[in-house]
Image (cartoon, rainbow over all chains, first blue to last red; front, side):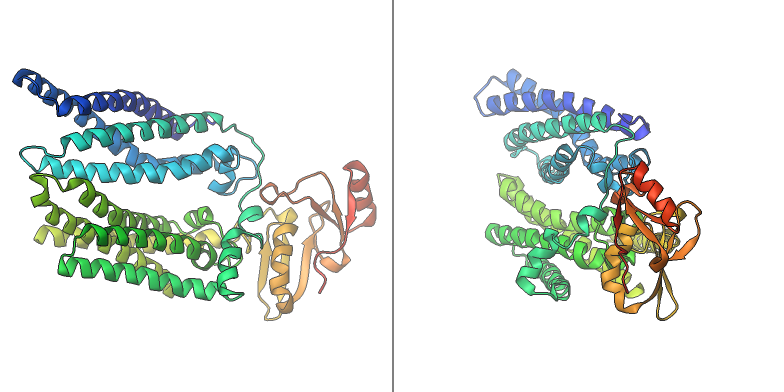
Length: 333
Length: 139
């Protein structure tokens, strides 16, 4: 284990959130099962009191888990100097490749679910009768499980990364000619795939922003349309990732043959802000859909359009800002 | 509404500052690093390409230089490598290349070593189970 302030923080947060996730997940599942049963007024009050305590503690845990995603990468970055052969985060991920890949996939999923749940919670708190409480408790028990797995993954990973491990870094993987990020678009677009990928990214990104703008302008918040919009946002995220690896990252780094995104974050630190904006923008599109899916109930249904408007404004703003940052970078270069 | 505008203005300022500091950091961090992957260059294992227009490209290892070589071949005028025992820069065509079990640049697992004298290269081959490698930079 590499001992530094960040690794200790990661383990501390991991242990604490794992324990609270077990308690919060089980308690919310029990409350969910009891919530709709007819009960005496005293018991109902006791249930409500317990639910408020659970929600209060779990909101804090979930907010900490949101921060944990960037903290995870900051911690990996802090390990670089202790791993022989690592020149960026990629090298650190090669010490425990399977576990790190698992955490890297789980973290955005957990982040998305937590964000969606917190929006639902805010919507429910704006009502007087808490019509979403039962759904919130059920979803909280699922998120509790995700948080538990994620936290355990963090602990095992941080403990498992041994100092002085010898690894080879990104150059030997991300820059080889048979890399999938090259072969996949090349099989579709041919040898000049980079140019096509770049154009495709601008088309999908601007189309997504345009669709969100139309939705906001005409207040079209139908479930089917929001669902399709979310699917399109996933497609756009996929194109974004491919175009970043193959086209934009090498250009921004001034290293035309190097395709590592971790190196990009290292050499061009403001790209982290650009990625953050893109992630928040894309997730906001999904959060709009999940809020519509779970939030249309009782009193909350009346407040829903206002909330959806705000969420899609965020999506519009974040995606536009991320695009602006990319364009400014390309123009400066 | 006024509060919203204030937040947006603050956000725009934040993005501009990030961009400014990012671009500055970018220039600083690229200087003196490998032109292939941006890694820090250990002078003893560096490779230098002099291009037709007089500019120079520098690489942290034989591995990085050979990966760039095919793309830059037409523009290259001269390739210089560093003799490991002395640390002197020599022309690649005059150098002896040896691959052995010793890794020089760990992040690319480079095992190719450069020598100006054949005797030194032979010594390395015997000591570290090496074998001769053809010059990776044939112009």
